[in-house]
Image (cartoon, rainbow, N blue to C red; front, side):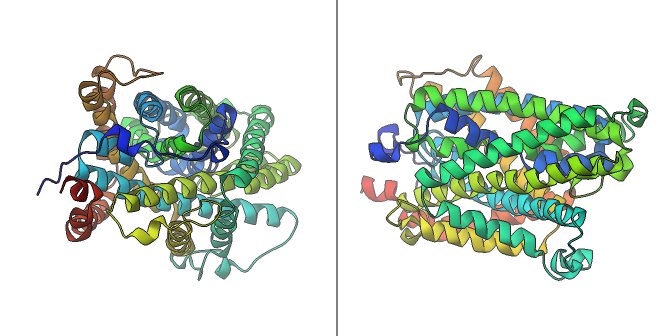
Length: 458
């Protein structure tokens, strides 16, 4: 039983009709920004500042950006060379073998489900902030999880259901909605930075590192969640008009934009009020309220309610596509590849939706974010490792973009990801170890026996 059997590039390159190739460079860049910028900066900035890093959360974001850059350089070459909606799952299958690909694929699914639930919880906080400004109040029992004294977080559930309905219409229709949401979100963040700059008090930066270097690194591990989402861009490869050009540009430009935005927001936010006050779900609008700027706080809350939905969009798009690809490969049941007339893997999409609804409705936001971070970091370790093997195994494959300084850059990426993983809590490691065990059990009980690669070789 060869659990490290691999796929060939020509077998995984996904064929779609020209009509389905409707994503351009701008669409892809906006999708990438949409999948990355969201709850990470709008919610976690305040929570991590309060609990882990203090005003030095800006340094935590900068460290995260450096690690993300190493990873994105690997993604850029792989996604342009291997055009499959499987993303990192397919990259690993082609290079490192089936069992590791299965682990990666399921980790991506788990990570996106967790991150989408996290994002939905953050969205709920901004919705409540918006309603509070206009004196509309929903009973707390219906907006908080049981651990916080509520019954269920209904706003978070509604966000997930809404975006799942949009995605069920197919990429051609849903991309218009996504592009609009991304532009609104970026606009809102720009407004916060500009207006917030007039309320900055540098005295709030003292002390800058109240929790020391350990706090900065713990914060970096937590806020790295804010950079997760590039797999969603790679998963869109089959639907891109000119993938060899658009994918590298979309990935690299979006990372640059995200890094600059994160550092700017964290510097402004922690200067408006003391970091001790920022353990809230609607950090940006809260900061503006503290500054007495209620009108702009209303605009930021309204824009956030619209814009954060783009992260749910990108996450659910990527997860359903990866599930569909794994189903084609025989590693999970075929029903997850069933598609409707719009080409949407609807069973995958709605199955994911149900799990997210349960998590968002009943689980803590930061806990979900940490679980998502460790799952993404393991995936990125595999992606960085994949590029080294890919260079040796496929030296003649046409590359529109080449990761520089291989194997140094990917090796450094692996080391950095492992360092961030080590800085996450013990409970995060314990729960993630259990998840990994379940993933391996499911592979050896089903996937290894139904593998398409195995059947093709017989």
